[in-house]
Image (cartoon, rainbow, N blue to C red; front, side):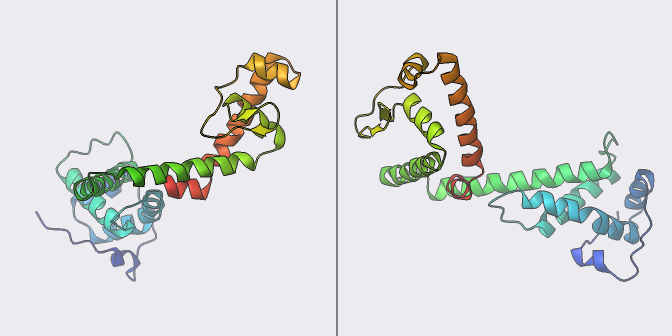
Length: 215
């Protein structure tokens, strides 16, 4: 079988054919090792693959590396009739490239485990403190009504506005207790807490500092 050498610069080669090919033509071109078809695949499919690769963090491979490895595997599978055509070739190629990314991340994680398989207690506590500090900062940025009910529910406040020492927190307050304190119905207390806590989670999980801490 003729070996295919695929460099990403091929996608920009002069004379690239702008014709659109259907699935049958793409597969036939791969089987016949048609250079113009390989260039077409690079030109048409790389942008989408690049976007997908960019959604992963901590990859040691760049988008071109992932695309080349994925395309090589896809081409081999097509020629060996392992590709059954249950999806489009683009979907199939994307799936292979995604697996390349996931395996690279797994390899990186294993290397980290080997080189640093013991996490110092102080380091963990520092990391934990950073997470708590960020969560607290985000909670404190919310409106007063939401801050109040979240604090009450999780035992962070006593009464309406007296902070409890973090070394001696009170237990989570029941909604009936919160309702009595705020002079509202228990169902209203539940609804307010759920609404505020959902807002809190949305802000937290979209916060760039939180994302950097938890990557």
